[in-house]
Image (cartoon, rainbow, N blue to C red; front, side, top):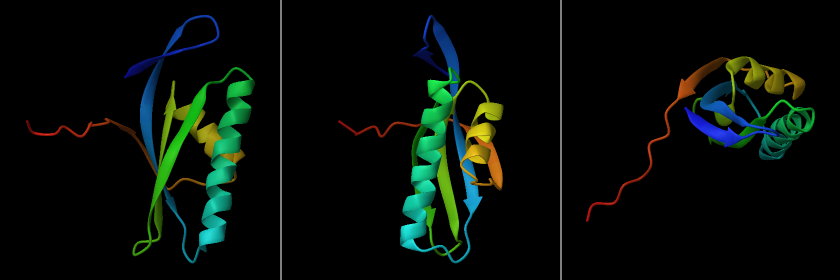
Amino acid sequence: MRFAAGANSLVNVALYLVEHRLPSITEAELRLFQAALADACARLTARGVPVSYLGSTFLPASQRLLSQFQAESGDVVRTATDSAQAPLARMEVAIDLPNHKED
């Protein structure tokens, strides 16, 4: 868990990894999908429900998109994906492992 500055206090946030199944999606549609996720998060945050869309990775062979979000709860992430009309196949709390270089 991480802490992020809220409007008046610190809030406890977690990293979530969301899987979307997107058969036959085009590159242009992927860009629109990604923009819809970012816009939905911005709208929720503007209404006082902090959620951040951190980006996605597309796996073309399996037609899956893995998206990362930061939020107080999985319910907030689900609200964002629902608002973006981006149904999720699966969601899990994730742990970010930084890249450590050997000295």
